[in-house]
Length: 364
Ligand code: FAD
Image (cartoon, rainbow, N blue to C red; front, side):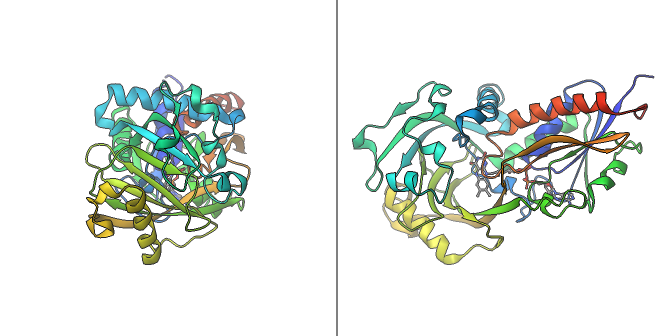
């Protein structure tokens, strides 16, 4: 009988689903995804549904691998797989000199007047002064994407089912428990930990370098392009300004906040009012010139970006002689735009781990 490697992925956010998807395309793996929250849920402990989501590379140039690899796949999905719920959208990235000198919000690499990422987008150009709104010192334009996260997470789950992966609910108290959660009934040789902020308290991991970056947003029915992403706003540190229209009737996300260390998942009505005011000031036409009252709100929401001091944890470790853990968590505000890069690294680490495991692996 052929040797089959039993794998349990803990977590069903964009990191877990993408890792499982790429692994399921390889022969010889029986994969179960176990998670407290699944696509379709909205919960402060589950970051993925709350993202815009777009790709505005935030890494330093030396870390460009993750975003560059992911961009190629997102672009392919727009062109070839419309049911994934992603579309192309022009992006305007605006910066204030003040934010570049006093970073307090989004990573400043994204707003450099000469970003490394200008070479990965076909139509990157600096915005002429006349197209830079009042209050901002410069900007650039390129065609990126906006993902309808509701649709895209469901699409990822559907791809997994098609590839024979099983999905099940479960709360894991200690990462070692995952060894016994495979749908095959056999012990897992490989556990993939993609629990995001859950890794802060997950037994056997308890990574205290994890911290939340609170993001409050408003989702509205109004439509408006191009996308706008600003380095900061006149309302102070952590009060961001961004707008992106999701694909396929997903509404338009108005952002937002970047509140480091704040675990509160309740939307604050004062913050909501400031977010909407900033949007109708910079883009009055989104509300037909009627100000906030012209916005048709679907919901106000808060997600916690799963950030980690020192960046993403992408590495393998031994649980015991027959089991390895591959970690892939801590993607902060860039989990979608790096998802395929890190999932490719997960596949490489799984393949290395299989070689490391002493003795026979589970046979089915
Ligand atoms: P999560 O989505 O949080 O998933 C964690 C999974 O682990 C869940 O299924 C959870 O139930 C499970 N889990 C946790 N603990 C346990 C346990 N003990 N037992 C069982 N299951 C467990 N990124 C972009 O690339 N572009 C954007 O435009 C963007 N915008 C954003 C805007 C906002 C407002 C927010 C909040 C985030 C944004 N992000 C964006 C960041 C992105 O959403 C995250 O980086 C990404 O969703 C993290 O995915 P994840 O799978 O690692 O974690």
